[in-house]
Amino acid sequence: MDWVKGLKSVGESSTYSATEDDGFHRAFCVDAVRLKKHDAYLFFMWNELATQDKGVSVLPMGSPIGRAKIAPVKIDAMDMPGYPSYFCVVPASGHVVNFRYSDRLNGSPAFQRYVTGFLSGFSPMVVRDSAEQTLILGYGIGGTVNPKAAFPLFATGEVRNPANIELLRNRCADIRKVVAKVPIRPVIAGQKTFLDAAREFVFLPVNNRLKASIPFRYEFKTKLTLAQLNTIISGHLQDGDKHVATDIGFTFAKESQSVKWLSGGLARDEIDLNIQFDKHDRLDFPTLAKAIDGSLDSLIKGLQEK
Image (cartoon, rainbow, N blue to C red):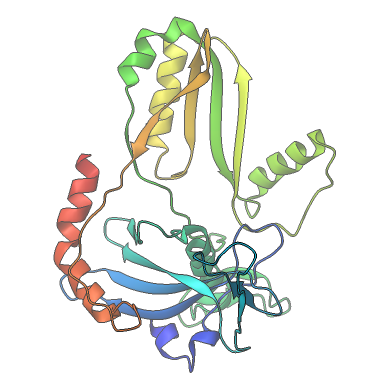
């Protein structure tokens, strides 16, 4: 937040350059505040959308057939089409609460890349190799480095409600396939080896430019004993903090189209916040911060109990 406040403009606030392998564009920080009642921080992000060089056009939907008047929408070179997203980071509990309009994208992948980009390029605690400045040795204060090697990574996963584990145990003998969803992170040596091998299986060359996490899904046929199933369940529950987005599922005999995941439904909810909009239908950020500050505890508690 201190770094953002020290910039001259929003345009300087992006921390990364999106690549062709990403499914999103750049993100910028419009504003950031620390909530008064909580040890939490609210970020107002702007997510870039792809545009045409000559701008976009609008079509009045009430136009008569054959007589529609399409009008161009000119976009200034200094303007950036996009959409807002809001993230409340709660360090003590490890939560990142994503607030969004019901009809908008959430911007979560771009926010994760944004923070990782800050950690690797703009944090004052980064200690780099004196000869190779792109090599991060670690993080420390006043030029000191922790003895353990470190790499910048900010990853979040969707919190989910518990699955019906007893159903899985009762029907263990009917399990015919295991399905796994894992975020492969190329910056981790062992996971990059896995990714390289997976690319070779589909005749693709090794790609050493990949840095961001890649959602990966694989499945294989197998039968499990109850002891093996319990090992998978306990491992998944205990390892959740390390691989938050990892999910493991199972299919039963004669039910191959239905996957029973160890994670249940998403812990999400629709809430009403008392916020204000100006005459241009723009949200007042200080009002949003005040509304979130007043309801953050009950919101997180409610999501955890769903």
